[in-house]
Image 1 (cartoon, rainbow, N blue to C red):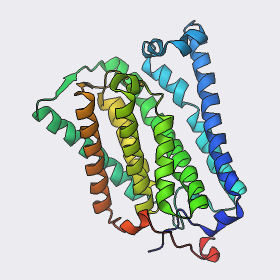
Image 2 (image 1 turned 120 degrees about the horizontal axis):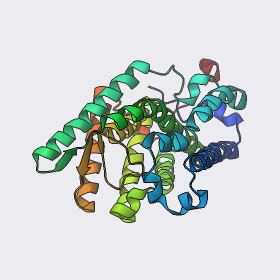
Image 3 (image 1 turned 180 degrees about the horizontal axis):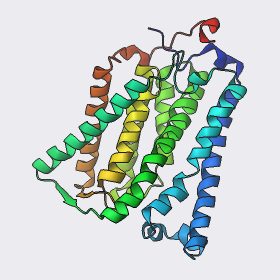
Image 4 (image 1 turned 45 degrees about the horizontal axis):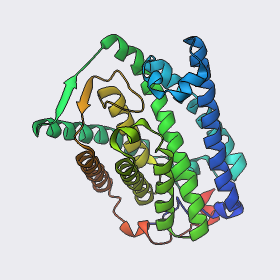
Length: 311
């Protein structure tokens, strides 16, 4: 089976620098919208904007739905604009933004999303059975205010990140090295670096979190290469973000939410091992369930399709 995600022939018409310019444009738009969102939030709550920037703990005291909208609301226009601009910019069909030479598999995405949520929940059940601590903390009024915004915004936020790291950055690195492995490793490194500003880093330590983010990125990148599209990686990413924001949250999380449960994580090393094990088990479950087992796609140069097949 041909892997078309990295090696569509139409990519050759686009300068390599064009791919990285697209990444910088997306990230720049994200920062601009987040800056504007936080500024509006500071005006609404009559707080000095400079104080909000210098004191991240102050953000945790704001209503979760307001903070979520300020930080993630900009992903909606960015993603919609991305769909509108993709074909004029790239000259490729719209489906190529998320996959190779095939339509997006919505059924696979939905099943992978449900499967990911179920496996993550099962691991928490086993965590409690093994002596771990998860406490009920539901504030129903706060939860119901937060719920519709989380359901709306996290799909856009996670799709944006999949575009940046797996869609554009991975493809751009592939253009340079003509091999999937450097593309996978390079995009995963950038994913980890750009998440090192999260508050979990100060909570659990930069070394542990750098490894954790790298493993997460490698897993999602491998899912993209093995399935020849973003469906499994996006489902995995969205399930994780929905779960930790709506069901079981952590103290010291980047976005403190009114989730139904609060877990007391183990020491950093155990948490790294536990989180990485969950990621690997979940990824292997998705790979087996969807028969994405052509492992050579992770290191062999992908075979390009004929250009007339694409259109």
